[in-house]
Image (cartoon, rainbow, N blue to C red):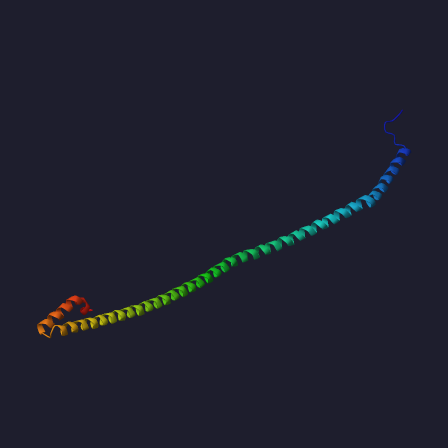
Length: 171
């Protein structure tokens, strides 16, 4: 009778040899394949760990730079305010200088105008004096030619005063 599963010595011998061959193949594969794969995975693990530590250091450095830039931004506002304040002070000083120069110029102009007015007044007074002298000589000529009569001289004086006008004597 034939059995479906026969455990004879040949089968056991073949099974043991197969097991030894598989074990030997496993050892060779382990040495030739698994160890390089393990080494590759270990290298990859180390490289990833280095990349993570490098990324963490870069992140920390970036955060430090960010903090520095934020401080600079805060300081920039202060510096801008200082610059604006200094510019305002300079502008105010410039404004005060310009105003002082303008006042000095105005004072010089007023002084020149006063001097010129005084000169014009003096000139007008001199003109009036000359006119009075010429009128006096004309009057003297009329008085001398008209024979010295008091009524005639009074009328001549009145006539001369009318010619000159009363406003000349009032000023």
